[in-house]
Length: 226
Ligand SMILES: [Mg+2]
Image (cartoon, rainbow, N blue to C red; front, side, top):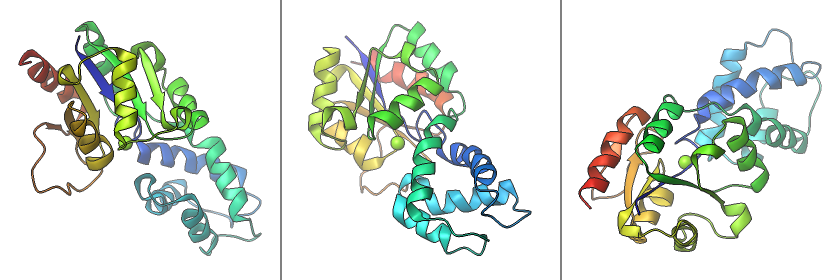
């Protein structure tokens, strides 16, 4: 049985668009603390810079924001972190072509599952906001299963839950280590979703896509040759 496994953040969700959408909520909710006339687009760019594609760290991002000359009343780092955690997952924006890609794969008869790092609450909120649950037979979340990518334990758990052969499975994700190397080490065929990270390995990726619209063709190619 062929299975297609997906990463969530920056593969099916567009993180920079999500942060830009959150920037508008932030400006409204902290209006009484902020100086007048802040532009939502420019503020969104600042938040994205501090977020560093999700690797900026909550503390670092919040402290850096507090240090900016944008405040008239101080806020605490904890308050900013809490606000981010409360509102960012709920403003998730789908990656361009997400539904078309998943629908095409579903119609082609592939069974699919999600394997994602993060807390249960944030990842479940994203799955719900993006209406993803119907595509997937299983959603394996690190915060729920107690192991995280690139640990082979989470890939093996996903393989076991889906009852599939690693050699007949494809893993799609943006992270060269957590997704690509992690799934490769478990015998899956990884497809790298390019554009979010610099490729760190000497050997180039065997399979990669720049857009989700390219993915069904690449998956057919891999799984048909199996
Ligand atoms: Mg990712």
